[in-house]
Length: 244
Image 1 (cartoon, rainbow, N blue to C red):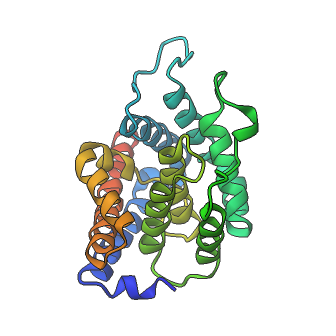
Image 2: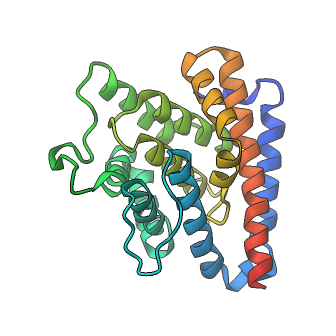
């Protein structure tokens, strides 16, 4: 279903560069046996960067009591995308993507001010449920390159805003689940979120272009996401170098 996207100019090559970069960092000597340590650091960096993209503060207080609800939600997602919790959530994603999205939203949006009835439930507006169902079917059936699938899941969730709150956190976490479940980044070592934060304006503009639905916009978004995965592998290498 998404295979034609891989044939857009430059996309297949960009996807291969991302795949090669992530495969290489998994072979780093620090990641052969000590990958649990580097993956945990990657999860924290990803969570902080993802929160910052949505305007949150990123400082972690010494006492561990995070006041910013966006950062707190992003860190909860980070914990769910690390270690045994990641394996459990990946299993849900592979069987029932909509359940995994609901879980991600529950983690991201839980807050004293949040309406408990809205947590994990898509907005009731017309078309939201249908587009989510289509996205879930795409995840379960597509044979397109994993970087392309991750870009589409990410972009569609940003465009659809299925929950109305914390949708950016959910979209970036869902893209990470694609990379893990597909075997592109099975240990979640990459940190593309740092790239997106550094190029936040370009990220937001490209997401808007994807939402517009034109071939040029979809191509630009997909290329940016592939570049982020490649850059995220470089971030992963810096973590591994520090741990070696």
